[in-house]
Image 1 (tube, rainbow over the protein chains, first blue to last red):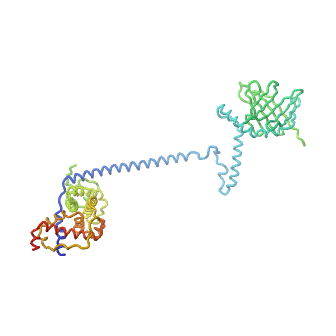
Image 2: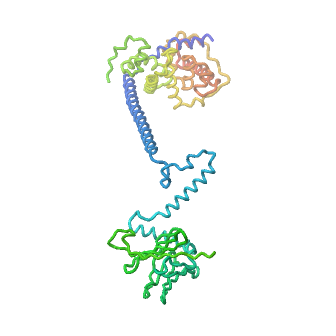
Image 3: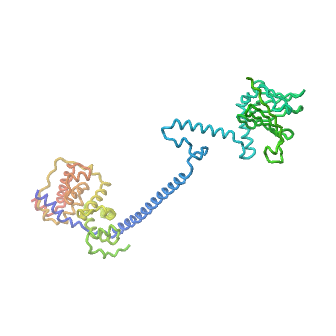
Length: 272
Length: 192
């Protein structure tokens, strides 16, 4: 073991003999590597800065978008700009709120339905009116059931009485007899549309298409220039029926005062 | 870039390390000059070819200079560099040599007892190291010159402890054989 120790000692004691300076090329190589590391570090720093800037920019954009979105009204366009009454209620009043909400919606829908068509171009209005009349037609004839029976004129000297009766499921007809002349007025359904027709001109059956209708009013129109162009049928209080023929004055602005009118009004005899 | 290396000629090791951390090229050159000869000697003990040893040295110093922030100053700075150089040398050797294929022997003839080595020139004996096979040389270096235990060597090279021990014995046996083959006069005299 002594020799083993000696052998090891020789190496341990003399290992400095292994020392020798490397060639100058070694430092050159090392320096090139260090230069590369420095530029990589610089690139890495630039990359880090640019990434941080990008993240910051994204964050700023996100915040701006969220602010912009937050400023817009979040309510739906078809809702009232004011908060609904239901929205002010407490959570435990959900049932009552729902009932109130439905009532308010029903009121809004009714107002919308009765709103005259004034906005939009003329052809668009016509389409809307047609759609409205079509939808009205589906429920229409039944709404004229109240007209059935005999109606007396308000002023018997002005015009005669009228007798309304249903003809089948798609028409109701009123007859006005004056002397030997009988004028027949008819409201009937043709396809999806309701029409008002009259034969007050013996040579001609005139037809008016329903433009809009409310529970107590129906307005029919014709585009012929030679005849009355609008017929309005109104159910008033005290069980009155009014029929108005109007001739539009093409040169004047729309309005009742600028129209030639024929107004006939009846009341119904109530059987006790 | 030509570095005129005077500024850091007489600074303390701590100051030199701090300057190197700031990427001062002259400080880096000074540090390299201080330790490159010793570390090149370490590399040459592991790696036979001087060119390869130089490449290992460059790679090791690159790691030293770019990882100085990891040196806490708790131990010897030279020892810290030396560990990096040894690790780099082992990495180089692992790419070319499979230490797992080295033989594990249960019994080895003990080397011939001889006092003649005491009379041999130390340089001649050190020269024998480079003639050892890679496995023997590596274990010999790690055990005798770096001071690692067989358990540590086994972990570093991915071999068993017994294999490490066997490699060390075989290294010494090989040296003995080489001395005989070279017909060293001292050995002849001893054998008589």
